[in-house]
Image 1 (tube, rainbow, N blue to C red):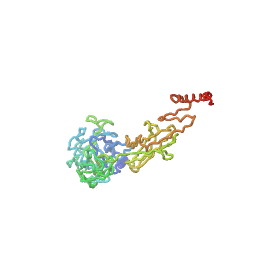
Image 2 (image 1 turned 90 degrees about the vertical axis):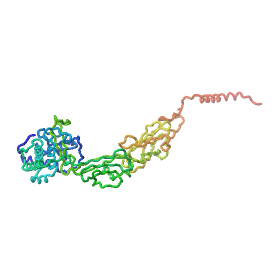
Image 3 (image 1 turned 180 degrees about the horizontal axis):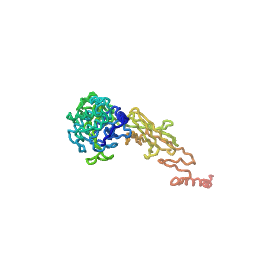
Image 4 (image 1 turned 45 degrees about the horizontal axis):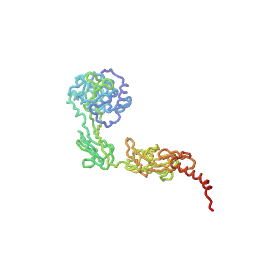
Length: 495
């Protein structure tokens, strides 16, 4: 880690403004990170070589404009090169890969004391007052904290650090002397305990779903459910969701529900769970840090006013009646169930029940030949979002010429957006309500009958061969007619 000579006032002002901009936004609730989680290390803020590292639990979509950090971190290895713009791994003190004085639990306690009493764990105003450094800015606070940490992790004594300002020096002595006089801190003293466990096993709508059990060392915390569901005790009595205590069991009141679903219960408490956590950093993006090869290890600290969350989720199966559909197929022109022989438009009115209001559905249909159940390829569909569980929706079918004399039956299938399997079907060749009859084609002597789209017998055409008994009958008739005049001439005359 390189040291510096004095810098210009302009450089210090620009650095202070940059840090102030990052820390101006109030701290949002932070999901408690777990050991082994990854953390993205942003560009160091403050003076070159002694600044703090902004930490993001999710890698920013745009690292050049990462937004407000979740946490901050300071170096605990003076002689190891720092790396930023990559992900490290969150661990405990036992996961430390370095070999300096930080391996000593006593030194770890001193470092935790410094982190707990420095900025950003406390405000600049409070730190400045405690250290006798009025007008303290972030860059001076960062520098003082970093030098105080190195005093314990890498030196073991006070060095003649190249202070940027008298305020930096004053804060350093406040932190280093305070850590020396103290017995140090343990991770449990620096961080809060917060967790919540959800219920196991299957659950049903129409019941109380739980228990969700909260564990915390805070006097109380608050809980919420997403989506919003009333939270009760085991007897179904509403609880005070802003005053939940350690070990309290919570239930979701689903006694009025009948559909399947999921809900997440989140516990929120003031404070941070990261006390005593470190980040092991690889030397290359995507690499794995090891004792033999790792970048500068950093210790995490949460900003003042940190709020932590923990969540658990439960699922339940609905008791609702499954959707059903029924259909009525008619001629769109006059409302009866007979179509003209040369085609027309058939309207199928689908009556549905037990749908979920506000959810998108699609009903798709096809006309089938009643004679043999074969498909015609005549299809129609309608997409709709019901406002109530029961209602109707129309699907139109355009029937071309060529189906004269046939009966057509509508088969309908109902699907729900985002659900692969159909939620309801109505395929019944014997259902008269979803059947239309196409009139027979008129027969004009001397003209061929209209062509059919299968499913009906073709009519004999004029001039087509005649065979069998019909041909014999016609020949006998013709022979009889031919013999009649001759027979008449041979008839004897009565006298």
